[in-house]
Length: 125
Image (cartoon, rainbow, N blue to C red; front, side, top):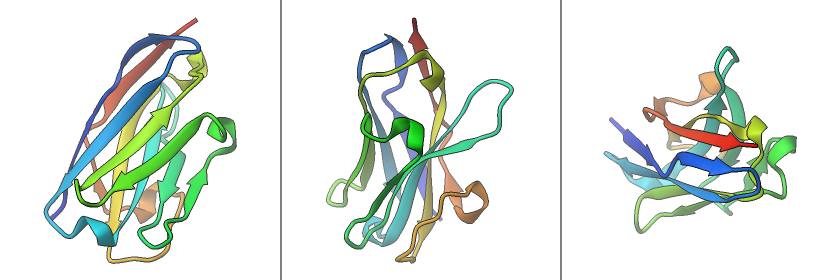
């Protein structure tokens, strides 16, 4: 079993930065594929960024490319999402997700096995 806990969300103004963290426990973190998703009110959960455990390789949705950076610290069992130049349209609950024992990465919600409880990010204009 894998347990994920997000933190770092908050209320910021457009143009500000936030760093989200996702602490993982339960299995060897270094063998996970990890990702961030987000869900705005009334909308479906959408892919934001993903990182493999070999390489690592990183993937982003087009609208956050160049503004967000996903990273992982395997020694700390923690996933990060550095978000710069935030926009009001980035407002959502952000979730981290994991799939264990895999070298590939996917961008679809149904592929991931474990999810955190989410952290709210609100960007005011």
